[in-house]
Image (cartoon, rainbow, N blue to C red; front, top):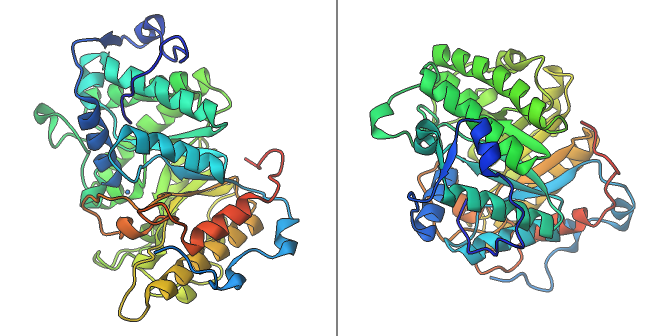
Length: 396
């Protein structure tokens, strides 16, 4: 996600020139955008999905009985930083390791590099640095390829060069670029999880025919990744509220459950993103069986690949009550994850960012920590849950 000054003797060469040639791609030393500019661009593309008082309600903390029960699910946050600095980006890995086992690295493909057949030194060094940070903190890597534009309800491909604006998955150049990128990430990260397509059902709402072309590419990418990294679990992610046809800012649409089967039999996990505060004004309005309904449409393990809930004060809720609502949602969702034996759960934003892109979500207030780093009530729920012993191998 960013280029960092690194000591080449201490960072493993994750992707050597010999391996690059395997995909007809080379490293170019001439294409070196500034480190900060590259970080800012990548982070904004990813967005495109007061300290607590001592008398905060203790009921929000796990009970001693909870702490004795082994966790079925691994826990993670994304690498989205709170500030557009390299230091802040590195801090997200430390935060993820402090209360979990996974870091999610989600980004738009570097189309120009892929189409030119040349990975910039910037990209390669960033990959090496992220691999080193994950290893340093003992984190499993979850990498997500996010080709569609989250700032526009995923109605187009994101970040395309000018000469390909408006292109879709039917374009053979896009097809090959995505396969090359999947191979590159599988080789460099050897990730525990790889999402090929993020909230991909959003694109289907706008371009159903081109979505079918994506499905073809997905099946090819699945096989390509497995050849390189057989133990990596591969899947797309679906936006859960949209999958149900519940998004309030869309015209009424039917549920999209049938899309799940389009990825069979090459579907290791049914993974969703979920931001239910856009549908339910209050956490108590969310049905108890909200995530259990997924079991009606798959026999695969169900996982949450990115979730959030705003802690912003409203006319109805003051700051403390808003944080309590966020914590209550998280507590119940983690209980659901245990009941459903989920392999992993990812809360998308660890710390409120100081910047926001265009989004229908309140990303600026959806972190587990406030912008100044102090803990919200939800962080306490997250951290206490992470202290429970993790089952030796989450079901997958």
